[in-house]
Length: 157
Image 1 (spheres, rainbow, N blue to C red):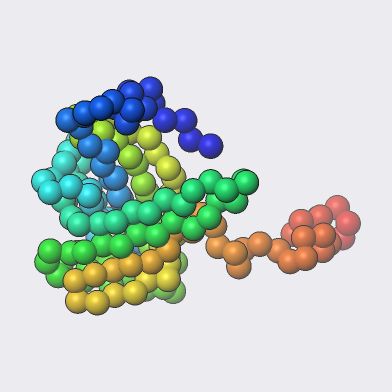
Image 2: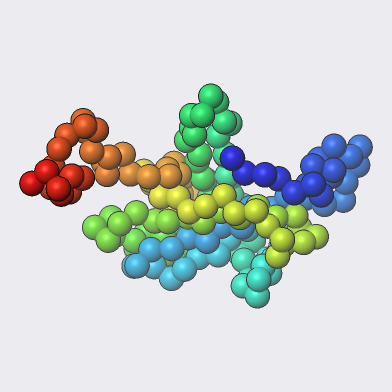
């Protein structure tokens, strides 16, 4: 569970506020140039790094009885350079990784990190990329969970 700062809660409950909550996204992969994006109309600087203003829709799932749910990320690129960069990522070298930090526009350095997620499956058009954000790869989970193997019980072998 992530605890939200008191300043955020106060601004959310205020009748009027002149501040907005921004999502700072850092997209990494061995095959691409690290991409820094923010869902704003102007570029923003956070911790000395310039984040490019880009239309993006980050949908965080609601918490339901301990179920994490699935988040999604849709990016609308103004130019082809961002999408072209993302398309060069080879799935052989792993999925694209997206780090999410939410912060107020008035204090971008004081953000709350939601962690790093795998971005897949990815669908592209000329100026659009979309996919789901997952916390872990379900293929990395051993099934059934009580199987004895040298990996999870080295003393039994």
